[in-house]
Amino acid sequence: MNKIVAEPKHDEVMPAPGSIETCVQRLMYPDPSVNSEDSLFFHAGEHKGKAGFDTNRNAYFVFEGAEIHFDSYFNVFPAHLYELDEHEVVIEVEGEGEVLVEVLLARHHRSWERLARTRFELVAGRRQRIKLPDIPLDGVVYLGGYALRDTLIREVNYIVVGRPHKGIDLVGVITTFKRDDAVQRTGKRLQRYFDANPDLAEDFSLLVVDNGGDTRNIPFARGEVIKNPNLGGAGGFTRGLKTVLDRGRSSHILFMDDDANFFPESLRRTISVLRFTKTPNLAISGAMITEAQKWRMWENGATFNQRCIPIDNGRDLRVFAEVLRLSQGQPRHAPHKYGGWWFFCFPVAAVKTWPFPFFVRGDDSYFSLANDFDIVTIPGVAAHQEDFFSKQSPLTVYLDFRYHLVHHLTFSSLELTAAKILKMMARYFNRYNNSYHYDSAAAVNLAIRDVLEGKNFWHAHADMAERRRTLAEISKQETISPHLKVNLHELAPHSPRRNKGKLARFVRKLTLNGHLLPDYFFYAKGVHFPLYVRAIEHDSFRRKFTVTADASSGRGYICRFDRKRYFQNVREFRKLQGEVKRSYHRLLEEYKASSSSLTSPEAWESRFADGGGQTHSD
Image (tube, rainbow, N blue to C red; front, top):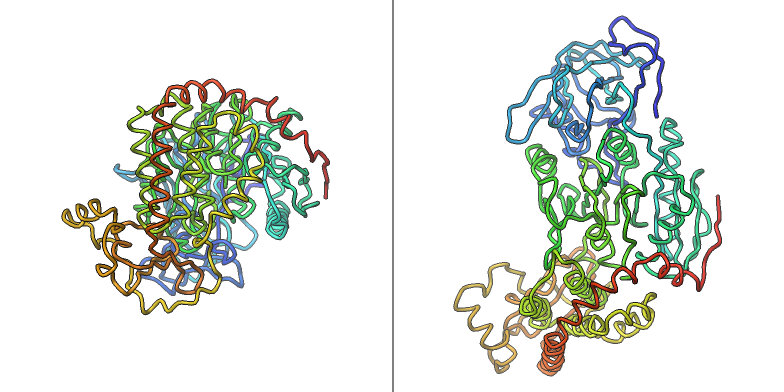
């Protein structure tokens, strides 16, 4: 908690003597190691080139007569997420120059309010203050400035004056497997941040759970490494959860991926929202932005029902109207909502069910669905990583479809009829088999076979070692080559509309997407799909081969038309459909009954018993 006793200055608004002040949000700057899209940090309007970010001075500059506005994804203040009661909100500004400052309250689909407008003479090292009026701050707040002479803005701090509703002791948990370089970078980045923000130093600590890898220490003063058997993300995060519960000191846990790149300021914002809420089960879900398109939202939380549905997917974060929409436009209590474990913070006291032993994939959605979390997202709290399509393989297809079935067999709110389960299975299987992704279609069949085995499978395959070997053998053509030997310019480019008309759909269905057609009906030229576009049935139709590749790097793979593999997969799938239909009610009863035993602390204790246990502090 940031307690400040400040010396008054003639042009500052000061809090009452002895009152508690908490810095809940600080200004963020473009950083090429994370995200340097200017429009996600500030807007200069028509004054481009006259306002921006000075990388040498580490400050925003505004030339005389120009304007700068922090109506942006990383720099709006989401006041609507704070329960402020009798609290005051003060904004501090520090820099050099002379600027006309205004503060606005923006609301989605409602009128905006100008909260303040004043002139500041900025002097280096001295913070000027604006007290916001005592009205409901039921939107997002941002600051803008018009330079009366050349100006630098180094800090814009949002301060809440008054006692927080609760104290927060947050433990971050990172699960890693042979990614020591990423862990070391994260440790150094966190240490730099907390060195510069000592007011938060006692509120955050870090556990790195190393799943049989080579990480033994982390360069973070409040960090430690726990060695663990390789039980995947589910096992690593559960080991972190168990450690926190055993120690009994912390109020909240933050699950983070070892390869998720985020601004450490996300930690201040997460802690701050939790401090000023009265909602006991409030959880924070960090958004995901892809490394390939850092201006575009990939997922701002998600829901699950027969498939994962990312919230706000595709929104352009450079546009403030889109930022406002994703900040306030999504329903707070969407059904079947969950948070991805690249950045998911939750209260320890709200955990009633431990994770399911999926190894990876599905553990995060299961955890949210099984526990009563009130999940919100915060603008600017986001992880940057590769999108899931870039990581797709027969292994991930197997893992994805496996947990889809388990979710629908376990949760009453997601229960489907046998007919709908079979339809979902067919939709998933046909997508891959029809588009020549025969490896992935075989992986779907394997996933169904394993789910049919029931609880015994999950007890026997917690480490997934045997299944990973099996899937490696299945993967005959979908393994990504780092340097694909094919001329992409000689291929037909992917078309989202090709072969999608009513007649084309009928012909594709009648011919099993071309697998019943003679060879002379096929094009000689293959089709090229970008690496983030996978298994498109309609655009694979009548192609002898497809190439899924990244044009810039040459990474990718080739799928070739193969009738024999197609019909082998179909025969196996139809057999499995019959087994699911006959066993449907047994599966429902078994998964509903066994889910608690598979996720119990005792079950996880026995999984951990085979190895690990040593703790290493840096």
